[in-house]
Structure formats: C-alpha cells, structure tokens
Amino acid sequence: MQGGAHILPIRVYYEDTDFSARVYHASYLRFMERGRTEILRAVEVAQSDLHAEMGGLAFVVRKMTIDFLGGAVMDDVLTIVTRPKEIRGASMTLAQEVRRGNDVLVRADVIVAAVRDGRAVRIPDNLRAALSGGEE
Image (tube, rainbow, N blue to C red; front, top):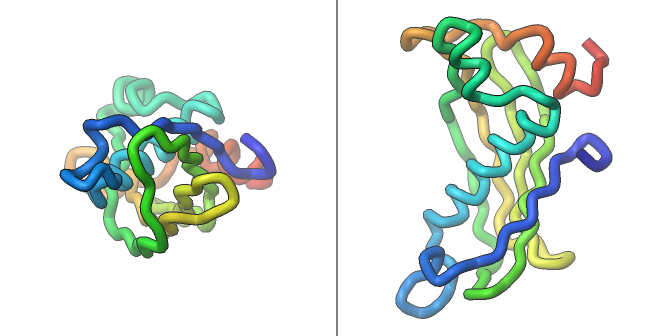
C-alpha cells in the first residue's frame, strides 16, 4: 500500500492481446480484478479466508464504470492502482487505474457488494477499518 492505494505491476503477455498485439479490452477487467484481490491481501484479508470463516461471504461486482483512454501492447509493464473511494454498509466503491508509466490507460470506478447466500451483508468491521486506514 502506498498513500492509501495498492500498486500491482503486471506484464502484458501474448494471451492478453488481440490479433493486433494490443491488449484486448476484457484483459483490463482481469488486471483490475487482480488489483481488487491484492488490495485485500495487502490489508491481510484473503478472500478465501473471508469465504471460509464468515459463512460463505464473497464480493461481487455490482457496477463498473470504465473509461478506456489508451492502449497497451505486448511486453508493456503496467501498474494497476486500486484505492478505496467509499465504504458503505454492504458495498464499497474502488477507484482503479491501469497505468503505463505516468500515462493512465484505463480508469474505472467499481462498486462491489458483500454477499452471503445471494444476499447483501455488512462488510466486516475489521476489513472496513483496514481499508479505511484504521479510521473507522
């Protein structure tokens, strides 16, 4: 974590590209999913532990707003930046960027909901506090 954000470097591989050797748009979704998983690990909360220890708790994407601003190509090293933007009862909004150096290639706001057995549940207080920097 750096300044409240999680930083994840990712190299672009052949499998991430389309026929033109540019990153296929859906690959950015996978990169950002990894960023959301790793921000939880960075605050010492593994999704598998949440699921096992909290009766099947999981996070699901409820809404994503995404802007594609530029494109990456094979062998680029990208940085996935994930930062908590807002944490509510059963949901949180994460701001994410995919960067190549100082250039922002993709920007997204992602709302994820905590669910158990298909129903929204309150985000655990320890996770809420960890993502808020201990402020709650």
